[in-house]
Figure 1 (spheres, rainbow, N blue to C red):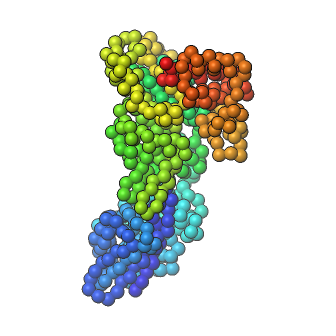
Figure 2 (figure 1 turned 90 degrees about the vertical axis):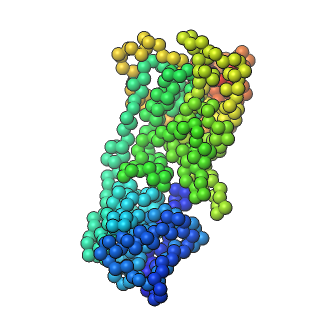
Length: 506
């Protein structure tokens, strides 16, 4: 007999409906899976056979053929175990096929019949809703994650027997429901805060400006100056995450299998890959493409510590995501897009030994070594970094002070107000912050007053600022003016913005 069970496959961060067709026919015992299955899908026959027997059901000693349609889409992962097992039981006439056709199923089976969590429950829940299915049957550990999607009932099951009894109408299961508002509030707290940082007030100010305008940042300073500590606290002052942004970020983490039973990613992601990472690990890839660190940082911060230590080919692949806010991975079977709307934060030493310009330590590098060290960062990459700030070593007096610094909540309030100004400015367009402005927008919104024009002209000549620094200064000055609640870009705003081009000076 023939039975059809609905399941799903992941293409990028989107779900695609897959029909699991199971045919049990007379013949020598054989189990064949077709429809471009990869290794884990082919091995499901052994897990399914043991799970069915150990759950108290009889495994049919006949010829079993499983087809995963559409047949031209490569299937991967262990999520097809549950639909295959229930398809075999339905083909034997033991399961209600009508209820089976109303639900999509996914789950990995243990040999004893327990159901383990799988990747991509949230995108597959979105797919089930779009296809008009009545419900989605998922492992219990994935139920809260899938229940974020409204408009489709989500049923969490722990064993094969429980799923069989539910779909047969013998054992009702209450659909999983979550209060999105309370879950969003409960998971939107950060473990770190800016009031932990002593000193470095000018760097905190630069990061506030960066957060307000969505500007990429480069921190340059000696070892132990607090560059990493400051970068880790940057997400805490970014604008409050919206529910739509949280769901987008959750979809990427769900596909990557990083949810760990959590229902929602409600805080700005912070990803800090090691400098030995490959280009595929950074932007995504593999034989079957997976999201990389850039996509996992979607709507958050990607922090590259010891920037010159990253391989040059790895850094150069960042150009497209920084420009387009998405990554496109091309393979023989097609192109897969992943979202990558990030703030890039980089940290580096001023030279190879790390003590160039430090009054407490003598630099041992020659001018040629300093030049070679900084040359590891290409001009096109620096062109995409708006703020370059020097981070000096913290003095003992600042370290030992007991007075608490300003906390992240206070800074975030000012950042939110500045972003609201920018959203009104760019209403009806696809721009969300000053960092995304084009040349036309800069001419329209960032023209300084006459005194500011003169100041900028003198700075370009005396400090040897590059041509690419000109537009960056105007963008940052526009953000500083927004933080101050001023309509015009004044000389004071430009003067502060010029200080944030440390590596462009002669």
